[in-house]
Image (cartoon, rainbow over all chains, first blue to last red; front, side):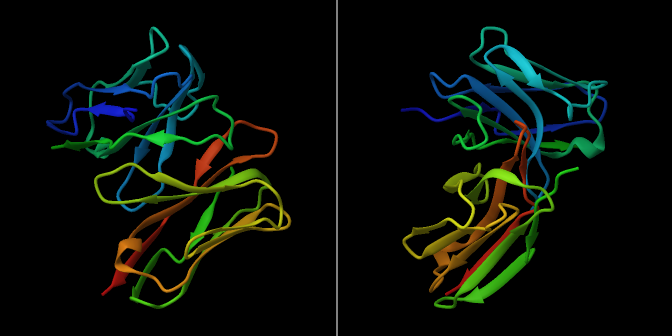
Length: 115
Length: 111
């Protein structure tokens, strides 16, 4: 069974440019998460979807970040415009039902560098 | 704000040594999970503990959930270079669907 797929794996952009990340979760998983991870630290939740509904986006900086999961399957996270402080790894994860004890399966992440 | 503090932050040990990583919070968690993350990869789940006082063993790894469900520990016996990685605890606070990760412990096991 294929795992969580993310693309691109790496992205280097100039500040103020837009950037988008794509995630395809494990088939049948209703819950999809986007996390931001700084080097050596734990991931921080940006947004959580149950099917196509964003049920927790309280930590998403909505002035520059947006996300969508239109058909309840794959998802896109966008930053516009990017700032130097956005340099980090963006992780996507999926789980069956989103309960705290459920197993989250992570993709390899997209490493973003903003110059 | 719910926080999961891990200690130590960094740990470098020789192969064959034992170690313990701690995960502490002032909040009660309905369950706690431990992940290991290697460079360039996403975290991979090691174990889930759900009952206060629960102890789970996974080969050389022993996980314990505190009686009050506010803390957890990970003990590795006879560490091997393959244990090297970033260890993360994570959990959902009781009564919410909020899920947070700990601050992380970076382990390096030298051959």
